[in-house]
Image 1 (cartoon, helix red, strand yellow):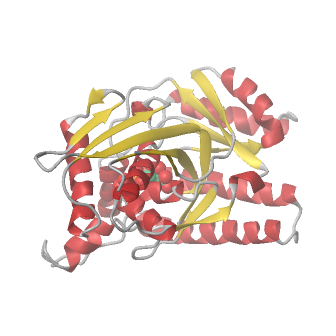
Image 2 (cartoon, rainbow, N blue to C red):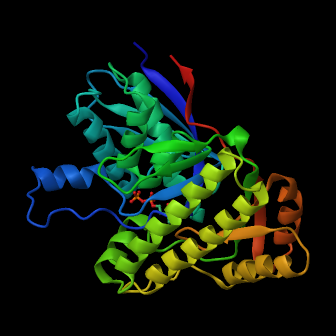
Length: 349
Ligand code: DP6
């Protein structure tokens, strides 16, 4: 029986975004249906994302001996903040309550990218953690259920289990599934880190506030479903060679931009407003749109709950997109990435 497992998972950036959770019955008590539904962390919008090989988390989980009374959590070599520690313990409790794990654990996690940069660190973190914990379970779950377990830690993490282009429906206890593997993808992304103050409102609380207060939230749910269906249909045509790859790329890129702007419209109309963009965010958006008219590389922008801009482009254009993006005022650095593969175990003792 292994006592120590290390897993690696890649971060992912959504082209169709998850923003909002399925509502929980208002009168459900904490021990009943409401608690279970809340702990499932089910998204209210379907999403589809690209895993990025250049952004990854490595997590080691170690089963502590019988005498251990507390879980221990280190992040990038330092003790985790109390908030991160509590979230980890709540997550470990879910595995213990389900009878998959017993006892206390030491968890050490390291990202190869800045943790506070608003680059979907919880996606790779919870995917790597779920993969490592599963390797220590008496009866490990299969990869579909592993994606569900990752989702309970963080919704976006479910999509880092299959990696590549991964899709997840808005349904109770939905897993993410592989829509197109990393090796089959003609596209990739460059991540532009821009000048901005540290992220203020985390996704978890931000999306709750949006649901409770944005007048556009219900329109967003409809838009998100329609965008997802458009992308799934475009991918179907790509797989069946019934549309030109360039056409598919353009239609997915256009949907990704519209979906990102719609999500940010909901964020900005949340009370109080969630204003994640900085002046440099807008500078990158305008630059990318200008490249389209001046004969530059075709790239499409998308932005998560932070100021940084991810540019979807053809793999052949990655170097040129990276070079041009790095020259936009306010861009600190650009991380070019190829598509990432699935979450995996890298050592077991
Ligand atoms: C804007 O997965 O971080 O990145 O489930 O509460 O942990 P929790 O939220 P999280 O939200 C991701 C929001 C997003 C869009 C996306 O990745 O789809």
